[in-house]
Length: 167
Figure 1 (tube, rainbow, N blue to C red):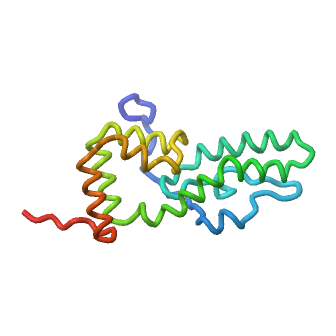
Figure 2: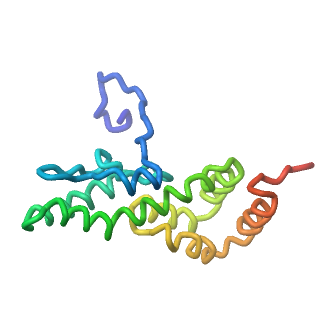
Figure 3: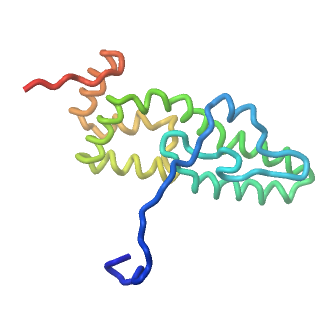
């Protein structure tokens, strides 16, 4: 903003807050619709628990809601659409969340993103909704980033703990 002058005279302060996400049990038992109402996007808990991204799912749920409103039973149509299009992906991600945020794995992913264009592409596709969690591991392995795969294998053998580096 400073480079373009758009923010001239404005107070520029960084801010941010993680969007809350639901666990796999809550995703499957909290109804995001009822007679005369539909919840969409993050109001319905449709937020990726790993990436904390919600825009893709907000747009997707908006399309499902619009299509559902054209039916004789919008609530049932919307819920069916969610169960078919969105909820399987989010429940899978919610189950993976604990493994994904172990300190060793997080450090490994930061290294991978810093050193591998292929892994950055996979993760960009994940955030954009083009990469489902069901095939994420296979696609990451297909990047053939051997040193990272080796480090992940060693970490898994130690029960998720990162290797202790010695000099």
